[in-house]
Length: 347
Ligand code: NCD
Ligand code: ZN
Image (tube, rainbow, N blue to C red):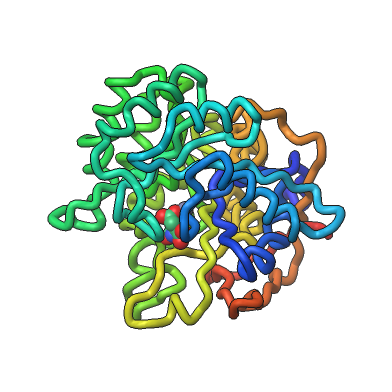
């Protein structure tokens, strides 16, 4: 039995850090274990221009704990007014590593996102030309489409037509939650990848709804039925480089989760690596954890694999985390897997 595992320092290719007091509170949780993260731009107001990304990066660096080995990889939030020249300049300066496409209304702070996809084509054409990846929140927003079907319908009606129109565009299907997402990712070549979150490997929709509503398991895209969770587990542990970790750790203070209309997002920054070791061990794939967390995402984004390492150890006693992380803006509940976890990151 393997009970010590050393892997290259991991990357989180989809992370929400927020701003202000929440940023200061959550950043150490990621920086403790991860060397780099793709930073989501859905702030209020969103990070739309190169100047916005520069300023946000400076705010992140200002609260990074001293001595931390962490590099934020910035992104821009695509709007119908985005200037292709500004995007190219931000990429050319080495500031941004992706542009994020939110269909307007699909998720938290997405109202400034895209309604008419034809209006962003000039930006997407420029991105295809310069090799800058587009990270896509892949859900349709049509209220007539059932929320559990929104990812599959997006793939058929938006993603596939877009990729046929711009086959050289590099695309990341963010936080896939369905077997359709897994299958579609497999139809692409080197231009297409998909991130998978920690929590979607652990919960299905029963965890959210059966026996009482659990607001801390509510996220978008919403967790689907068990067969989809199993498809995600198979994909994440397959050793295929197209699938890599993007935690989508999305902190909201408890007051905003635990109310009549609770915000979407699971906060997994604190315990993602032990949870993933648990899942990969269950799948008999501990030897593939390093690919998923530390090699494949770097490869897709054209970054070197970290020369540093992270070591996880399995103990006889379950690991213990605090239930909540206190931030200056209020407590944020840490994702609870609902089972004991025996892996922990060596400190
Ligand atoms: C994210 C957030 O809170 O910003 N929420 C979530 O449920 N994942 C937005 C997102 O990635 O959809
Ligand atoms: Zn997200």
